[in-house]
Amino acid sequence: MKKKYLLIIEYEGTAYHGWQMQKNGISVQEVVEKALTTITKTGTTVLSSGRTDAGVHAEGMPAHFVTESKMKPMEFLYALNSNLPLDITVKEVKKVPMSFNARGSVKKKLYRYTILNRDHPSALNYRRSWFIPHKLDVAAMKRAANYFVGKHDFTSFRAGNCNAKTPVRILNRVEIFKEDGFLQIEFEGKGFLKHMVRNLVGTLVYVGRKKIPARQVKVILEARNRRIAGPTAPAQGLCLVKVCY
Image 1 (tube, rainbow, N blue to C red):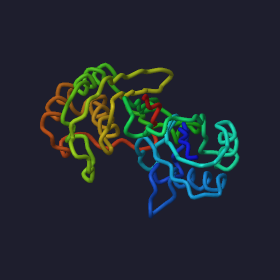
Image 2: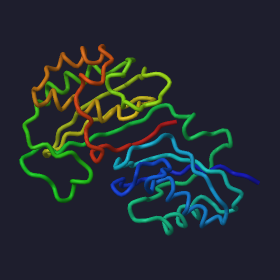
Image 3: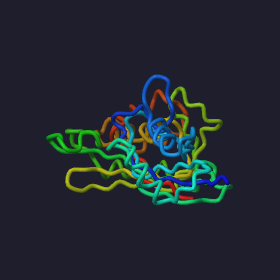
C-alpha cells in the first residue's frame, strides 16, 4: 500500500548546485533521492516546496515522497541521516495524506538573508553571510524595505531567465534586525520569483551605502525594469527558514 511522507530537510548549500536536479552538477534533491533509493531498494522521487539557487541554504525545506515501504517515520529519519552527508540533515519525517503536496499546499515561506557588517570578516560565518565592511544606513534600509510589503509587480527584481507565469507577488512582511555586527533581513510571502530575494537585498544594500535614497526604491519597483535596480546579492547569505502549510 502506498504512503506519503513529508521530510523537513536542513542543508548547507555551499557544495550544491541548488535544490533541484541539475545536469551540470550535484544537487540536494539528487543526494536525498539516492539515499531514499538505497533505503527502500526502489527508485524514489522527492518533490519539494520549491527550489533554492546554487549556494543557498535551508533550515527547513519541506519535501514529500511516496513509498510502499513499511518503515515508520523514525526509522526513515535514522536511516536517511545515516546515508546522507554531514551538510544535509533530515530534521523530521511524518506521514501525510495522499492529497498533500509539498508545493501546492504552501501558505507562506520565510527567507532570511544575513549580512555581516563590520570591519573584519568571519572565518566561521563566511559561508552563511555576505561580508560588507562599509557602513550601512540601517534606518534608510528599513524605510526602503517598507515599499516591498504588499502586492506588487516585482519585474525589477526577477532574474532575466525567470519563467514564472506572472511577476506579481505578495510580501506579507520585510523586516531588518541588527545584532552583534549581523544584519538579518527577513522576507515572508507565499511565493517568490527567481533571484527575487537576492535582488531585493542588493537594492537595499545600495540604499544602505547611500548610492540611492530610500524613496528611489518605489520608483524602481514601479518601473518594472531590472536594469535600474541594485545588484544580485551573493547566494551564501540566503537561507530558506521555514515553509508553512
